[in-house]
Length: 373
Image (cartoon, rainbow, N blue to C red):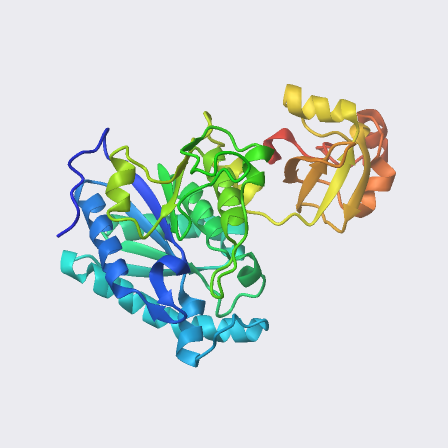
């Protein structure tokens, strides 16, 4: 039977994303830990019985494919990784469905690439599809489409993907279950940090990578994912997935790992898309006065404050905005291409009108298309 959630310290959350790493799902290269998966399914079923909607983000396809092929080391060639993912994905989904069968729940496979979340129309389409799957009472099981995607395997630690899914679906919480017990204060007590109110450079310095043959990322990717999720207003738990009844413990106020407190004001959906679902094609450099106008006054970026650019970008591309120190302070949709920057840098509005008499809007990035980072 599912573990009891009778001791909730508050109302059950409306929606939760649960991400499981390869180390939680397997007991060795290519060997699924079916007992643990069954236990996780029981906990998720209990959450659902209490009124919480659950989306699962599952790693493991590449590792399973490695096991079936008898590989002991993660392949270095992209095509080999793609092949491993294709071989392992069907077994992974079969196992999830078998785990939920005792509770009458059906899973729905959702394979995504970064492009699905970057392009605005596809971004909204993914959101609508996930909402429909939840409305039908299914459990979406999300993974990167590693079989056909190229850059996504390098990008795809699945921690970041889970944070993107949590933000996209307005989840209350993201739970990242892995072999890590939480964030360890390696520079101080050596104990688990129970709560992180703000992710500072000191917090990031506590993170470390992974030496697993099948996993990608480690605590570094989890902190990066937490940064993304908390800015979307989503609380983040990082805990050891092997802990008995870890989900009931988390949601009854006895989290064995680390909790990252969400930011006070979540970003509006479109600006969240601009900030976190893009791969900027270039950047513009601005002076200190322009940086203050953006950060302190919420102004649009004007050509008078632009001092240069880097990279190749066209009108309508998403680009970064950096201050004189080289720090990225904002991101947005540009109204000028990189080839225009040498001509427009430092010009005021009247000078721009003479240069582009047919243009109605002369901002480099309008404030509606700009988000501070």
